[in-house]
Length: 328
Image (cartoon, rainbow, N blue to C red; front, side, top):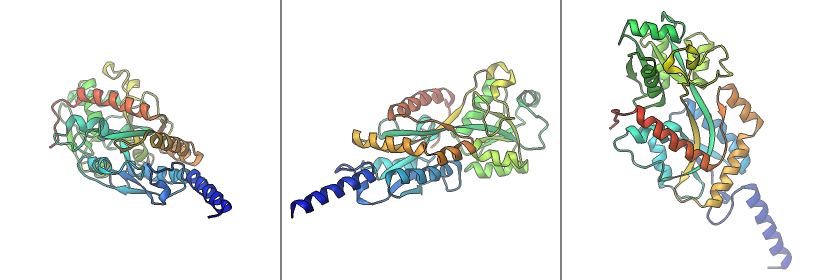
């Protein structure tokens, strides 16, 4: 091989590595294989929606295809289990919603992995909050009226969720406890069928992620009562927070969730750092920022350490709410 040819080959290799952002013997992205981004929820739901928008932006940063794969089941832990078993080469990542990281360890009797020990935190993606929506025929128009009605009719009101131990189940349970009311929980297999029955009047109310609930609110199919964030959400500016109700137990009410990217355990530190940099660059793309904002999401970016710290804090918080709840 001539000196010119060797130099040309070295230069081409350097350009290829730069294009793929993260290159080297410990990482297989330079092979041209697509990056698999696993989602533990079904297609069309809020997590899937957020992941697909994110995958498009991340593909641009990595210079290769990022494919979203839906692996549903076991409270969204099947997706996590597959990532835990994968090679730590950056080709299999998990677009995780916080309930699987922070709530499931507290309620699942047979969780197949420990999110705090068996995964590599890579980067936060965004934060989200829920909104309490009610069937249009309900007699209450705000949080104070709802609480008064519930106290006058104990046990009469029902609330739906996407399943036992989900964030909208436990968020509504926390609201009930702090406001001193009793409501009956009716679990569904997903947010969509639960919302269908709220609209139809079979269920009185539910908490749902703002990004998906706002469509039903703006079309008049359900009535919004309050958001679970500490401040009003820009996509629902006329909907008050629970804290604004003036109810003593709801002061400082702040119950939300988040999405984050995780990889298998023992990912090389340099690979994790490079992926973190690429993810933060993807989240800075104006088009993605605008779409997430329109859906009611809040920006939340940063380091792997920031993701790990928030996960640990919320696991502890939910442990006090989930006592007595067990999912087999």
